[in-house]
Amino acid sequence: MKNRYCKFSFISLNKGLLESAAWNELTISQIQVFIYIWSCLQWGKVKKQYVAANNGDIEISTEKMRKKLGISKATCTTAIHKLITVGLIRLTREGQNKVCHKYKMLYRVVPTNQQR
Image 1 (cartoon, one colour):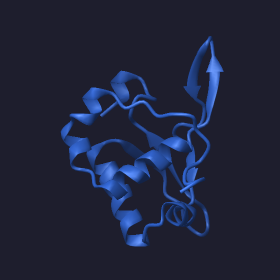
Image 2 (tube, one colour; image 1 turned 120 degrees about the vertical axis):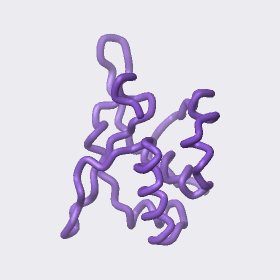
Image 3 (cartoon, one colour; image 1 turned 45 degrees about the horizontal axis):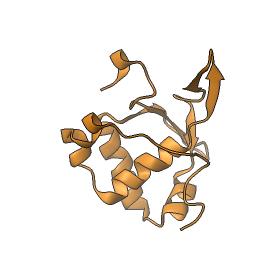
Image 4 (tube, helix red, strand yellow; image 1 turned 135 degrees about the vertical axis):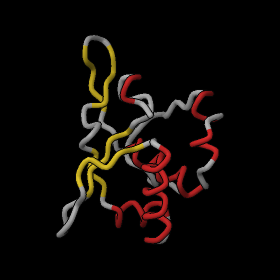
């Protein structure tokens, strides 16, 4: 499917993540949601290094994500809860009344001491 994710060139998954207990607990749908959230990061160059400019402020419409990924509301909600539980993302703002949730990616974007 074309245009399934937001704009991004690549995602680098290191061996430590792929062999971790957290990653191995995830289903295909949960991995798709993780990659979708990753794809919503906006990158900027600071001192010759790319950094995620919006980490902690990743606004995501779950309705839009569900339509792009072709998953149900229950699957999407379960995937987000699982990613929070295993420590790959964190909810930074709970959305309500047509305001989106905000997330923070906790994998390879934050300093090592903030990773879970």
